[in-house]
Length: 212
Image (tube, rainbow, N blue to C red):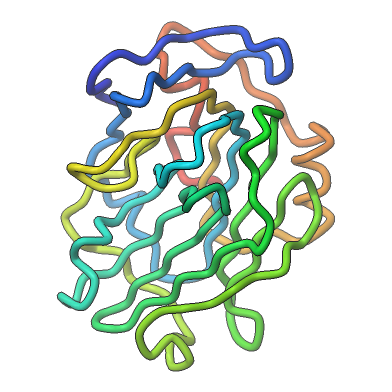
């Protein structure tokens, strides 16, 4: 991936190998077909931040394009709440947790997009969250993608011109299916299959291939 700005590799006291974002930088993993999903998906990441500003965690979408016919997905922080956006053509869904998470403690976030009747779920620290919903015709949004808009997969940025993430991110994952609650619990308790960081800084924060 390409580092835009300055992102530091670190060994966080709580999270282990991680990346430290300074609120001015992000990582672009490029526009690759493997990131263009056309069905259920799951986004997973650990984060620590005390910043209540809106900032991206991981996603392949520019919210400025809402209503333009583009498809995409985005896991982000919105005034301290964890939010998940799905867009398909002119319709989009925004789900946000009722609770806020700006306590500088490590939190594990998982966003799952699946079929009806429970299209979107968000888990924080293994617990399914109460959500508030908004969007355009989101009641009609019963399927996903394909996310074939010309946007790269981005870590640590919400959208061009807006504030990047300020804090620590670790172990970001993208799955081409919806994880079960048992699998989400295993991710949170670190019982999932581990991987080792190498010389590529982005390998510390994301699996570069979409995980089956």
